[in-house]
Amino acid sequence: MASILRNKEIFSNESSKVFDSPNRFLDADRAAHGVIRAGETQQQPVAHFLEPLAAKLLHERLDNLLLRGEQLERRDLVALRELGEPDDVGEDNGGQAARMLWCIHGNCPRTVAAWPSASKQNPAGKRGFPCVLAKRGWVPVGFPPLLGMKVYINGKFYSEQNAKVSVFDHGLLYGDGVFEGIRAYHGRLFKLKEHIDRLFCSAKAILLDLPMTHAELMEATLETCRRNKLNDGYIRLLVTRGRGTLGLNPNRCSEPQVIIIAGKIQLYPPSLYKKGMEIVTVATTRNHHNAVNPAIKSLNYLNNIMAKIEANIAGYEEAIMLNTEGYVAECTGDNIFILKDERMFTPPLSSGALHGITRGTAIDLLAELGVPTSEPNMTRYDLFNADECFLTGTGAEIVPVVKIDQRVIGNGKPGPVTKKVVKAYHELTKVSGERIAKR
Ligand SMILES: Cc1ncc(COP(=O)(O)O)c(C=O)c1O
Image (cartoon, rainbow, N blue to C red; front, side, top):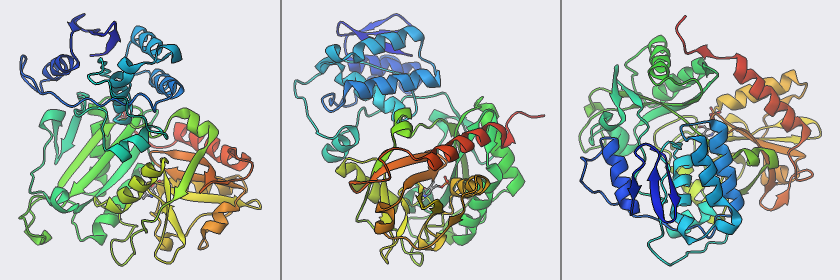
């Protein structure tokens, strides 16, 4: 159900119903998706923080929706665009913007709600969306819209509402489990084999016996995409230790739960890839490999989340993490590369970097472009004096970095080698990967 705000009333494009309050709209939305029964209410707090959202940012988000061509109708987008005009951006659009941003950050532009502000307070934050969220602890809206996904759990498919694991699952109680994030491009699962290989390595490291073979996991991932009619998107594959007792002992856990979710991801707006990103170093040290080895892609991501929180508080979206010796390890969800004197460098895996699959792909593509990559220990000094810098990750792909801790990298614009590798990466995603459709 897509909706727009006009004259302080909310219109739904499905029912042409007019809702006189945001909560009524949200309740109707939930009822439509079977989350609550018609007539019931489940009011959620609405946040208001338009002030720090520049109209420009709003436009970027809308362009982004349009680009992805998802379920909003053109006329809704036009109406939303009108709302985003600088002259028109007022208090009443705060909730709408909040909801829309949630939708995008939560990858769900299907339900875009709007509502009049319930409060005259306009909490101004100086540095924009993530900063305000982190500093003030607000969320745009308390209820995630449903997407009608089919979620795979241990061989069966469940609707989103019914896709559940036990509260005694050690994945939930202790972050005991492993996961992968995989991309689908043009009807193919990119680097699927590599992701499943890494899942097996992570599982082996934590003595978790995966209940499926490599081939079965690949097929289950492909089938989840088929069931969700996913050609382009993001797949989250995770295996939890399973249901256990309240004690730590993993031996008391029953069946591991294999869960596959096929959805969408958009980590950063397209403009950021053009302009390049500014990042900072944070104080949170990357896990020591004798504690929780960063090579294990485990369900315990608190180390990265703590660093991400620091980045957000400082007003940045991504941060560099150093290891216990002070060498650069990686970013909170990406590997890092620098170019110096026509040679590429990335921290060694022993520094505390994840064995990034995009990292490996970038190294191969750079070699084809005639740029060799070495893996020495690196300090912040090396980063500050780089000619170019970029980050790699399945979700983010390849992101140019133009400023680190306020030091301008190169000429402050994405460099030529970075642009070449970004192009080569996109080309590769068009032709490589496991076909989703059955032959
Ligand atoms: C901590 C960390 N580093 C690096 C990466 C990039 O790895 P990949 O390219 O395999 O996605 C990720 C991705 O999830 C990550 O979480």
